[in-house]
Image 1 (cartoon, helix red, strand yellow):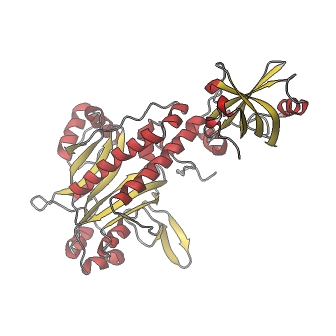
Image 2 (cartoon, one colour):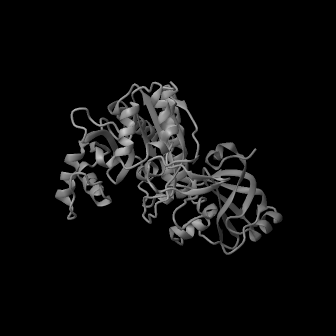
Image 3 (spheres, rainbow, N blue to C red):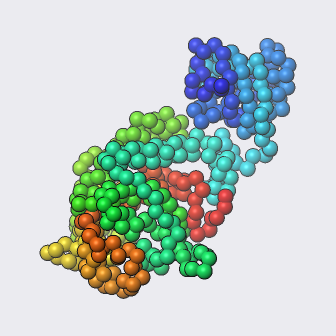
Length: 430
């Protein structure tokens, strides 16, 4: 068995390490090879007159990013990374990397994001990129743990569907035998149907697809969404759930990913404090109007510049609540005393929206009416509407975008950095 680099200490005396050659420094009679694996970097010190000649020959032949296996004695030294070095007794090249490299993994030569994504397999060897995906893994792990702890059932819903979830046109059509089909925008309709099945608490972590021709730093055409639906709950209940989940995920990342975050050069995650502010939509647009020049009226959606302006004023995670019914989906429950406002909310980071949710309409006749009021055909949603005819509990839920969650947590400049192989309007490979 190999020894992970982070566990190589002078006290071990001897170690066998496998990893990538990060850098080679030949000083004549002495060569330093920096060996890298997912846990860190180890200095392999090769005094040419004191090691076997086959070791010297292999070190001379090795290229950067080759995969090697090294065994030898571990010694303490203050000048080496981590305060230790390995003097090799064997040095075997397991897989030699071609030269020149299409990307400088040592990060001495910067590369544009598109160049990095073209060779993502190399880009992901960089400690900064590896840290992003260790954090992302921790986010997903803690999300599932937190929801299971709160008695949720994890479900999986179809990604090939016959009708639009939101009733919009931003759909990817696909050839599905003799039928018309699309890639799903959201598990929204299906998770609501499971409330009719009596599951009461469900969640899904899975892909969603939006055929929107964005070319921004915060939109993707394939993203990963954390979706939740809860029976016998209103919008306030699921907002509390979402707030608790966000804080728990931040705490888990801080507790388990500190070393990766430090190796990646990121600042330590600052854990949000509860409770998150609840900002009514009417007050939000007043804040935006006072800080930006573009006109904004009641009933307008929040533009990116409006979101930034409000975020600067708020300074922390916050909810925008009490949205106009006219700009929210047909399944959002309006207030009984003022149907022009609905029980919908967005969870906002100071930089951008992270999550959207609402209490849902659970009465069949009201739901049919609201679908029609949006200019949609209730007949097209019959598979969705049918469960509402046979007893549907009151329920509420939300969807949280994983990439934006990770992006804002780490301060990434582009959402594409938070997904291994992003899909946008221009990129289909790798």
